Length: 315
Image 1 (cartoon, one colour):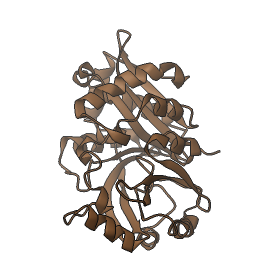
Image 2: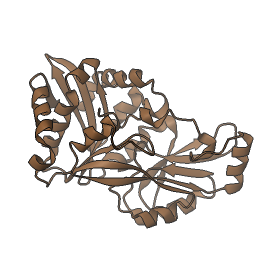
Image 3: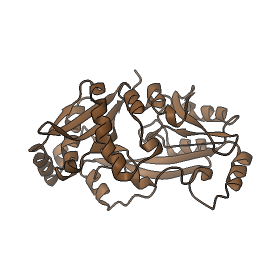
Image 4: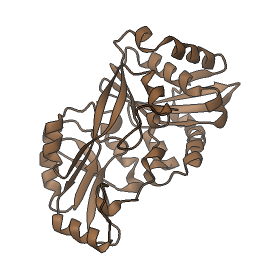
């Protein structure tokens, strides 16, 4: 059974930001988009991760895209069935270490991984908060949109990072979706969504009220999620640091280290299919030299420090 990011309905939930296009050999999905001020189109992977069923078929799928797209850019699932060499072969024009994902092996001794001070913070948070798994997430759609709105307002999010009510409504129907809510005196102070795909539980998105930060709501939610996924998954992926070069000593990094038993690399991958058109677009837009890929979309999204992926806001 397909679940999580590999399910076609997840790509459909992002249809407002690009036309979902299936990659038939690999069983993945990308978003095809018009390139502004040009007759051309390109593609991007679904946010936050590109996943597929058969990674051995990805190169042939990409070769097929060469006839009608200018370029593609995506971040492969760090738990995908690929190697750095296979990704480099598929994406010769852009291949770099994007970020390390902090992950927890649920077969580890949690007492050794999650240290005493973290357990004390968990207990302190749970003295004020109750965390529950929403058995029917759709019932809490409005509450989720409102709670996620705290993050939208805090970081002035736009575009695909902002999502929409319609997008969330579809995401909640994707198999493998889990929604946790943390309450204090029947008032929601934080919510977090996860996807279980294969043997991995991926932290997806979250929303925290201003009061929730004061109550350390994330300690309560993360702990509740870990307890729930025990026996249901092998790994919990808390995601990585924001941007291409995260600060390993930042508060965000230190927070995620408290929960992780190891890390997994995620890569930023790009390929130019039509070099002539790519160059024309860059010259027409008078793009200065940049490491951004594709260069003609530089500045399209807000800085990476405002990423909304659950683990990138877990501070």
